[in-house]
Length: 195
Image (cartoon, rainbow, N blue to C red; front, top):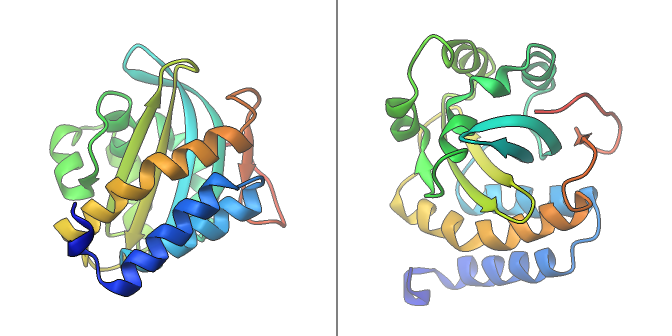
């Protein structure tokens, strides 16, 4: 994406998020950054997570920072371990291109994916855009997801997520302690078992 394709306001916001990511030292700060990114890409919800990859599959969740995904979704997703079948997680266990959920589901629309898809739909997560960055030295992938009740995501939004994902991923890896124990931030007030 060329800088000329960004509005002045978008450019300022993108640069501020990049600067914030470089100085990010806590889950609270990362949460604030992904919520700002959410607003730039016209999403209603934002979340990110880091997971260990074994082969082309998620083997464990390292960290999840919930910007503002619905609590009910989070509780069901974690309790039922829907991350193992989630098409987004499965996609980014293999690929790294920013994609619309509709394109991701074309690759992983099977019985394993159905519970995660149904859980998302039940909580108003009807459309989304995601990006993933593989971190080979940790054998982990960082995934950033922006969702909404309506599909307002276009190629311009994909390009913005492309710009931000690498910087946000560095912040996620940094606050996750290099991919060691599992941590989950659902906001400052509570924790659950993750992704």
